[in-house]
Length: 223
Image (cartoon, rainbow, N blue to C red; front, side, top):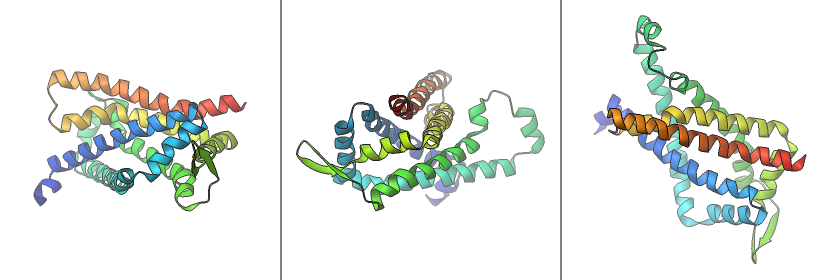
């Protein structure tokens, strides 16, 4: 079993499983974040559920571990491939049958990591270790996470720009990462490869536009 996880097949399997898990997280995350445009009560109730539900609290460290494993393995595989691949091979095949995103997954991943650090330090850290004002929603007292997010987007324009760029980098990353994850799990026939690439572009656009619209909504509404 240990040989499987150190083999190229095992590494791709781990990347695929953690990648699919993180894509499911993105769907949930975007669904909750979209409630910011519905109103304070809707978002605060959803955020309160996400931060107090026992099942979510159990999944949170698993998600963090998934992020760490995905980042470490992607960096390791990329650097290993670059070291083992002949230079002439790289030059001759760099542009053949590949997209810009697939050739620059390592760079896109690094940019997304920078965005995550900025985002976590401004949101997650304040939620977990800071002191937030509370509000009453339907008779329940809860932290005013809507006020925190809205304040970040409307007060600090540069944060909105970083968030929009992060959404763009994420979308580009998903155009390749989505179908590659399923391909590594065995969906690699010519027919399924075409289908998955089409679904990947739709998914990437939905995720990218969905996340980018949120800061734009606050910037426009506050102007």
